[in-house]
Length: 270
Image 1: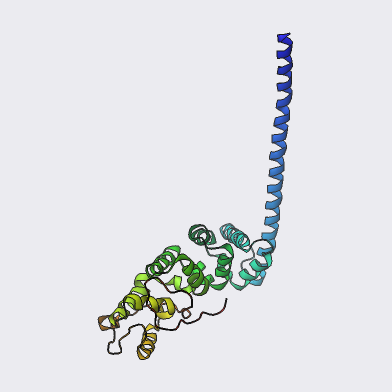
Image 2: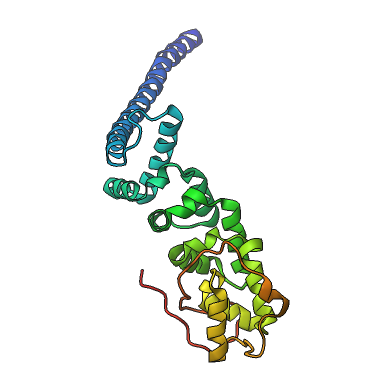
């Protein structure tokens, strides 16, 4: 009797094994089929978009494989951040800013979205607003610039909303070449501490090539502690070469440690 029971158990277990294998095989086959279908759909979409870009932008009729691979990766990143239904927005963005095709969007996406925590839709806006940053800038320079603003009391959300959202060209500035000379000049004009932080908060454009003109204006207005009797001392001969123009300051809560006393300049509407 014991042998009969054992024989039945053996038969049941052996009959179940092919079923488990069949289920696993079906699941694997289904997953592979879905993946291939998605990949095929994506390839067709890329082919249509590439054909349109080649004709609209007068690109080589047969792009090199390395170029085509980079385009494919960048288009995938843009589709990802634009979300469902964003195919037409991606097409318009690339036709308006073809330099995005040559950028390393995977690296920038990793830096801003995965690393800094920038929302995907904000990255999509950045790609449309300032393709120059993504095509010609680098993450080290941008990161160093963001750290400078943090040293001025800015929070991550301030940088995301005001710098990345409104003044992304500031992230093309080199701290040692473009920002430090302006800071030394301002300190030579008695603009230090809380006054300096407030000036940077209210008027980020202070770091463009025309910073001396802005300083003279603030001197006459008696703002930010700037002395009208000083010309910047030794720092007056230092020029922030290569500065990048940016829009004027924006409103909101001031940076930590900044003193009040002047009206905030409102940023352009989003």
